[in-house]
Length: 346
Image 1: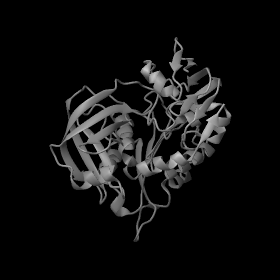
Image 2: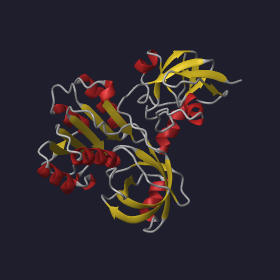
Image 3: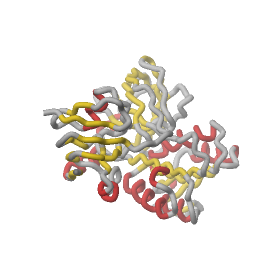
Image 4: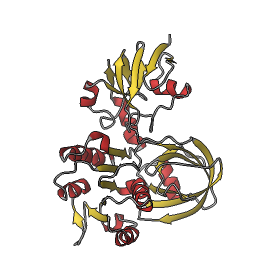
């Protein structure tokens, strides 16, 4: 039997069929519920459960910590009601909602950025116009491949879409991109998705930390902030294993030379030879440069272990939870591994 769920930011209660998540029912009812991955990884649909009982399907500890769970927070994308409920998504006045588009696109260029990262640029042929906020991502489907989520690396005001796709061991889609994708190929793009985007109204310093191809959304955020003339200090820490894993270094150095409020710091975690660059874990390099980060916005993107460690460390330096906007790049294998976990919030 269906349950009734009241959402505090929505006038009408919704019905949620047995076995259906609150988020799925809300989307079907036309509720503008914030969401991202829909798989319990990102935390974009984090909500308060004010009354009732829900069962939580498997999710990432990064998306919902034990402390947050103890405060009656849930993930709407994983929460299946066991009774009538009352919920509210976490308020964020700076979240922007863009129209969801399904677009037919065409590959215009493919470039080697590193030994294992391709820059893929696409033109929008049908289904536009496409608006998004810097830092968001889209679901991308190449011919004969499963849909995968990739962050836009271009600024929202640029017409050409840009994605950075890393070749992952055992990754069928990334292997296809690395070996078979061609200029002129048709691609379906659906989005935008995600709430880890640039907050235009914030006037405090910005700390951006990227690892690997996590540079894509961070590039969009930093370039957009500078293009909009934001005056606060902006620090970009880019972590890579070795020199060959760095990319766009000349471009970011040029931006730093042009904008006095921007600083670019590459960090190598496993350099194979002598280097003049910073070394170690990228989040530790960033934290070593500041004693107090209260009032800062932090934008994080890349491997989950880096994002989670950076989130924990940033909080110890005064960055509030709602000022940390993180996009952890889970592989399909890592997402599948979550299926071994269970949880219930009541």
